[in-house]
Image (cartoon, rainbow, N blue to C red; front, side):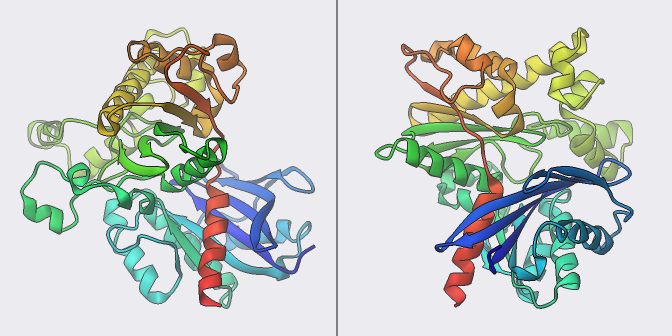
Length: 394
């Protein structure tokens, strides 16, 4: 095995994906991929790509430091990889605020700046910091880098970034940031490879998973996105509400006596598909259900997505390409069809058979808009960013 291995950590609010890469000819090539889901007990490490596929229950519990969980995970990985050869670790961090426009090396200063942004991403940012600290505890001398989901959207204009509130608050950081930037960066590269001259032209990318957002790109550059100041904005998600009239918050607090913490818990963890259906946060479960509430939840979900495609097309002044990506976008034809059926009025038509097969292109030959399904790869972007940071320092 190569003497230059790289680890990547893609932490969500309730899980972490671990990637193993080898550095070859100055590039990062994946040789393994695993995942720990903190929603399930006992904790289980799933190695889903590598020399051997396995699922192993972990004895360690998810504590505040994650030290024991990672130590046990590393012990399992060491049976298949030479972890003494790991030369660096890279992390996805959700929020970079106005401070970070590029990937950076982990230092005391950068970690403190990331921690200061916890109020802007309360589900994700603490998990990112816990992982950085856990790796430092286990491998104190191992260089670590961070890549920011918000960085991809720094190209957006102030017109797009502004809320219609007093201007002074924009200067204090109250603005639209956008998220899922690593996913969009990967899709932008993929479109560039598929269409070198246009990179998709005027494209809207729908990143649909447990967290969901859409991004308007012009030749691979972010121009607008559905998520704004926080990760609850935009379209409904698994448990997050998406865009909501802020007057509802005032009503719940003043009219019904809910605390701010109770409202926050409801909006982040009890809403979205789960709240709409009262059945499940998983769209697959809802699609298989005969319950009216399940059907209605899917209808609301796809209606909001289609509406966001139309809005983002207005920002771009047209639409050439629609891309579906992430877990739902890549694997659920019924969701894609429901979204696309609402967009026939803009000249979009999909091939039913191609869509059912999760084909790379699911639009018909006569469709004015090309509809693609592209698998995203955030870990690859983290690894590539890591090499770029380390090369700058060498």
